[in-house]
Length: 339
Image (cartoon, rainbow, N blue to C red):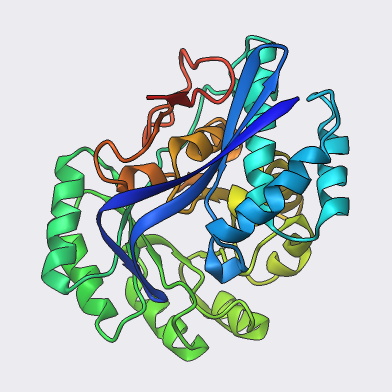
């Protein structure tokens, strides 16, 4: 196989703020793999929170790509080779893994979900995220999102006016299903109080306390009247047994775990431990999001709006429809196509 690597900087439609900071653009690294005249595409959307940047991805990708076996079907061997080459660097490995899966689907003339043997007859609808801003602005964003047809909103929290924000968003979008994400911002006692306040209004609360405080997560989980989703607490498949004791929902991300193959392992582990499943994302080009869409049949919940947060025309790729996650008529591979 031959390969190409391209770094892309994509402006966001609006600044995107969470409890940890604000973002105005997204740097992704695109990987293309060629085999017998067929090209597979994937991308890394690195996060500093997990120790990766576009610079680190570009640094390690040449070694990861050089380590790949010649046959793209050898996915186990490919992951083993990447893991022997360097530990961690999940987003960089995800770019390679996604490109391999896109390539395999195209080689077999099958959409990725069919190549994986999944049944697309029932898939969830993705949420659309309302980032932090002043309360009036979040109210406006919620109204605009609902008017645009988004049925599920995920609201970022982690401020001293969280209750005010929820009331404003709910008032602006009373028909929308709501979820909230604190991104580790609350103390355990604050989280329990917020969960009691949110009962009957939201479907679940995502990562209420710090991942480094599993006992705090347990404290919330045992007292919350609403389900708890683990995001930052759940990075890779081996985290599932511990996380299953402190959360109801496993929020998997291709960029956290290293791609499609480890994500599927994490979903199966979560199911085996009685958890519901969710697939989230970073702010990503469709070259990455597209692979996640094909995993929708494995999900109870989806949060795959990363490419929707980009400015018009900023994404160099088109992909399958989001938020509907409708795989009917899906193209071979992931369906990501360069514009």
